[in-house]
Length: 355
Image 1: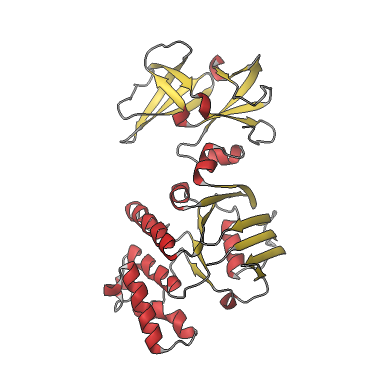
Image 2 (image 1 turned 135 degrees about the horizontal axis):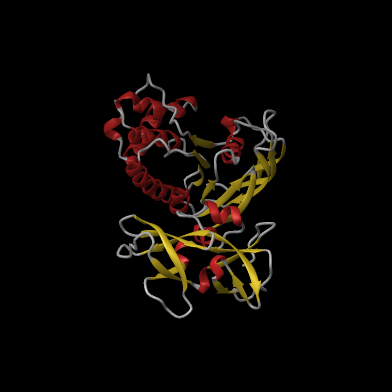
């Protein structure tokens, strides 16, 4: 196990107008499962590759257990990288694929065999050892790639979107297995993904990146409930947070359609703000109620265990999460209430969160 630190790390490629990674400061605790999350091109894979030694930073330092690894060759960093493509050797059996890192380290044949058998048992792939990669399903290949990384017993696991080639059902199952396995092994893990569901369910903490810059670092609950800025608010969540322009009127805020909501405690009401409401932070009523704001249903989207009701309020379109039994028809008049604890305010010019 090991602690990983990025100290003011930047990386720019000659073909890009901006830095791929821009002054990244990040501290990953010993044994932590950290997820690097962001859209394509945000710098998350570049950050991972610099830690692996496949790219070199233009400035800053990268440390493992307090020692700089920037000048070390990849083989000397004691990290294991699992690729999106699995990168298995097609001419080798599963056994030989897993065993390959041990052969490079010149362990005895007996030690190699013992370690391969142990990790194959751990991942439930002993029956696959004689096969070749072409004879395996995507999920089985993914397990073999993990086994090849685990058998090295590295200080740090690096995973670059390892589940993205799996179908939806297998991806959901595998991310549960992977999280449980990481906790069992206790190895520091940095996991790159653009899938927020993977990030929310797997990470001890999430580092959200955009345009090479770290936008927020925190637990999944913190990032979801208290986004640091508008980018995080609109990137995290499915559906994302509703963002509505607001103006001040005394101690209240007036939203689209003249919907009045109370200003959260501890935040002075002011102009130049946007109000953020998660779909579940809006309560939808089918009958008029005191203080509820009328709105019109555009369409309802049943999702089995819940329904996403799209409503128009003035010139704003809002998404409201309701129970499976609430499915108002298009054109229906409904009534909205904002849950006070779910109201988030953002500065309209900077995008920074105000509460």
